[in-house]
Image 1: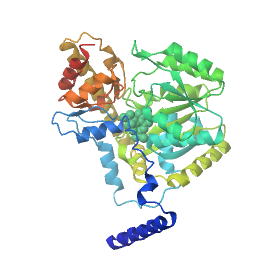
Image 2: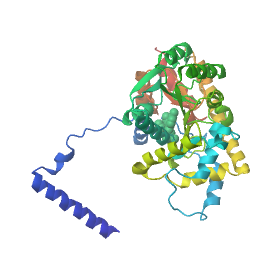
Image 3: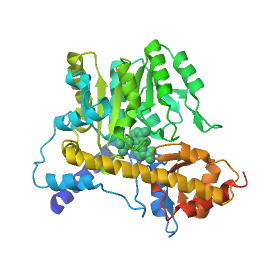
Image 4: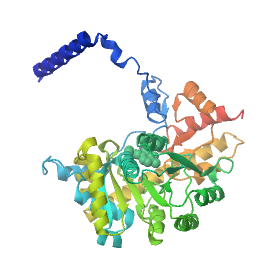
Amino acid sequence: MALSGALFRGAVGRGVGAVFLLGNRSMSSWWSNVEPAAKDPILGVTEAFLADQSPDKVNVGVGAYRDDNGKPVVLECVREAERRIAGNQNMEYLPMGGSLKFIEETLKLAYGGNSEFIKDRRIAAVQALSGTGACRLFADFQRRFQPDSQIYIPVPTWSNHHNIWRDAQVPQRTFHYYHPESKGLDFASLIDDVKNAPNGSFFLLHACAHNPTGVDPSEEQWKEISYQFKVKNHFAFFDMAYQGFASGDPEKDAKAIRIFLDDGHLIGCAQSYAKNMGLYGQRIGCLSILCEDELQAVAVKSQLQQIARPMYSNPPVHGALVVSTILGDPELKNLWLQEVKVMADRIIGMRTALRESLEKLGSTLPWEHITNQIGMFCFSGMTPQQVDRLTSEFHIYMTRNGRISMAGVTTGNVGYLANAIHEVTKSG
Ligand code: KET
């Protein structure tokens, strides 16, 4: 191995040398035009956190669940699925579209266990590289088959949405979503934007637990949004990265999608098991597109596969096995549902703890939004400058838009966090 590695490097070295002689270039000139990329606003926070040597440091940046000791969690249902899988399966390639068993179980979560669309085989679905990969696959598909379309993205949104549709070369527009003063939904402006967009526009919607704001439309508001989409013949693409994290119940968290389905929309949906099964690093998710009939679904799926093939050929097998083992066994599925609820409840508990701690410290600012918002994040309203102070003075790491990942708050650090927030916000 080591020897062939050395030979390989040698061969490359000679190749470059030849280019050097022929082209009269210095070796370093090939990439001298490359500037360092800007740090990612979310994953860059993790990098900075890891580099900090302080024993006090706290990471409430990335949306990754931690237990009350601040440790990453592997769910018990996942451990059990892995025990069952171990040694039992081969490691052959999956089909380009991924595991059929995995897709079948995954669609039930989004579309409902008894969905007529599943029975009628009207959903084109492929296993994707988690939620990010599902969004990217959709964006590429949109670009290929609706080349003149744009995507309407909420303000604010998960920062990577912008990167995804940018790299897929789909022009982006925005629509109103969050109201900074009320720290709630700007429903009137949202509806105006829906009405004012050209007929047949593509909209990106967070199915539940909106990131970063923690603000979701109510059921009534979703119905109104769905109605207006119908009037305008807009396409709804749901990014569902947090199913189960809003209410603690994945079924309830699919409410927005079900409303759109009831209203007869042909939706698209990105699903991820990163958060709700804690399978972050397994990169396991699903892209689905509801079609008019089975024939169309077959065609759409074949095209999605054709987009996947030159990018990564076919998706990884392990996460798909874990998920289908869990969801395919009623007992394990039940255990999963309980564990999702435990995670959601711990976060809700930390919201209360953070708010109470701030109020006890005598903060005169309003903090109800900490407990009003739902899902993994609290959109605190802190300014980038206040966040910078949290980091430089208190070693607290979070995104500069003021988002706190409540999943990283624990009984042990909530007092420290509250105190620091109070310190940087009390002078306005
Ligand atoms: N959609 C949304 C809304 C989202 O917040 C994330 C991840 C994803 C999709 C993709 O997750 P995946 O691991 O590809 O299934 N958000 C967290 C992590 C990240 O930025 O990658 C976060 O916002 O911290």
